[in-house]
Length: 284
Image 1 (cartoon, one colour):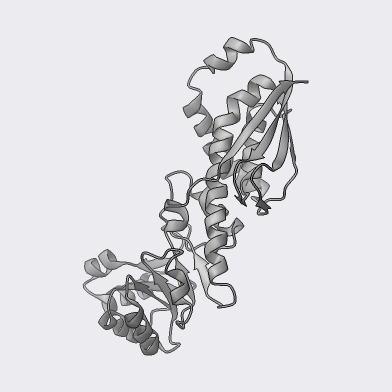
Image 2 (cartoon, one colour; image 1 turned 90 degrees about the vertical axis):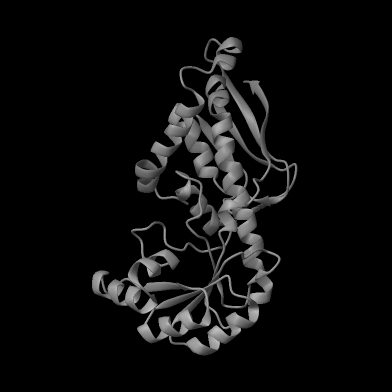
């Protein structure tokens, strides 16, 4: 779960921004049919199998609109849900339930879709000791939700943002003049508590990164045999991350390599939403 401080400082402003995007002045449709306050309830229903994630955010949307809104969850965060399952029930002013419906479902569907895909991909690595990582390929202003969803599904987070760690990618290396130069500059600048990760595209870059003392070496878009040789060259002198076009279809092939991490941008940029609906709204 997201802690209260994170919710108040980092999540609430994003939810409020999403609500302002959806309601620029008023909810015309709702005000047409519900001009006065009236208490009601609505069911939260899964329309397909998957992993539920974002119940806390779903509830928060309505709480920010009206703190008196009540949500009863019948499933636990991160649990498997099945098509047709009643996952919870929401109580409150019918106008508020209608005002927040789309924004709340957008968050819940997106987060649950990412958690579902993360669970499926993590399962393919079970027992291997390899950690599944996400990337920074997230939807702008939704990173906190999407990276949380990866964890909820059983994956792990790579660095959160550019301030979070040193990763020397191809353009950093080009700007520095080479792998060795980039690592030397990073060691001179970055705090000693920060690990230095280097992206490599071929075996010559791998050798240079090892000799320069990189802490983590990323094998980027290499074929299986090249990665195997890279692992032999590194020989435990650095941690190894595999990245580039990692999907459910090819992730299992990497299990036999002596690597520590597999990162996949697909977890956040290509996960389909989980179909979820609010149904059976009525007055009480």
